[in-house]
Amino acid sequence: MALVQLGEGRETSGKRYSTVPRFEFDHSNLSFSTGAADMTQLLERAIALQKANDDLAEANERLHGIPDWMAELHEEHSVQKKEIDSLSEQAEAEAQARREAETEIEEIQEKLHRYQTQINQVTTQREYGALLQEIDTAKGRVTELEELGITCMERREVALQELEEKKAAFSDLDQRYGTELAKWEAKKPSVARKVKSLTKAIEKLREEIPRQHLSLYDRIAKRHGGSALAPIRELQSNRKGPRSWHCSGCNFNVRPQVVVGASAGDQLLHCDSCKRILFLEETEEEA
Ligand SMILES: [Zn+2]
View 1 (cartoon, protein in one colour):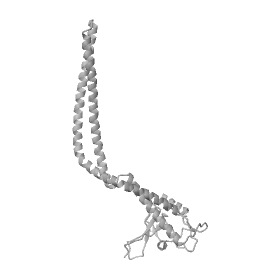
View 2 (spheres, rainbow, N blue to C red):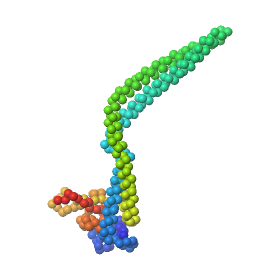
View 3 (cartoon, protein in one colour):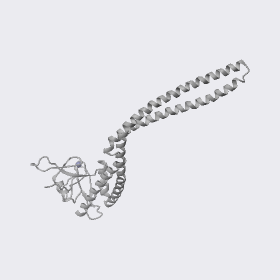
């Protein structure tokens, strides 16, 4: 198979490719025939590989991200959901604080009960005084805890009321979100299947493309974020003047000889600027 070299400013040596400077077809280490049919097939496979890689990237992005049509709704939904969750947590924290205060009150009440029994058994004035002091401190703490309990209850009420309002306002959005999410979830398995079948197709195509061409493809793709091929586009601006073409990857001018070569489809031709492999798309709109 012919090896296409990507040397900068390389001059061609073969007569057959004299219209395509910079690229040299190295015939020195051919592993099998480099007939036009082979080259056409190679180009077709490279195009198929590029298409499969593009589709795979798109499918993966779809599978692991929030689809575009849901992005805005998703953002709005998350913000409101967060506010609701936080209010709910706040109400729960107040309830918890109140429960703790009540538990402590119960414990102190039991202690006070014991003090009442003890007060009948004390024999000295000093013991009596000390016990009264204990009773006073305990009662003071009960008052404190009761006040805290009331404050917690009030704060909980406020949080709950705000929560109810927020929930009411949220319900419509939540429903819409649920519907869209269900739609998206229903689509996911088919996207996942697509990822699987594309991965398989890519594996197969890569096996079918000779190694040196595959590594060339990978090198160019790596340089251009996964894009190794670019269709040639005709510039439509000056219909009266001479026809002109450009590389759809980088917009660089494509020489007419290259277009002629590409239309034969039996050679690998590269953009002079970005080095992407050029090809002509089949168009249906030609009159
Ligand atoms: Zn280009």
